[in-house]
Length: 103
Image 1: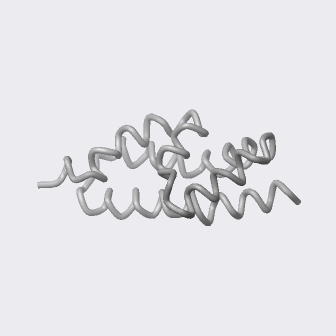
Image 2 (image 1 turned 180 degrees about the vertical axis):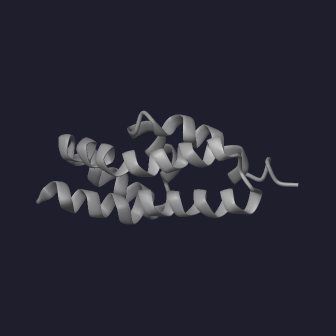
């Protein structure tokens, strides 16, 4: 039950906003298929990895959700740091999100 509550909070404040931003920007800049696949893989892995981390460290979970909600933590960095497979996806997408990949 606690794991489900953490998963919902993390999804609401961290995962969903990050993945929505990634998907919107990737469509806008016509990202390469390899980058899109990395982001899809991250979207599948991130919820479970973040929930496990939050259940294992209650205060990390609460602090992370709170920090992201008030804007003192970058959700992309949280996802990249807590989910090993997402670090590469975030690194590949970051230039596209900042506009470096747009013309």
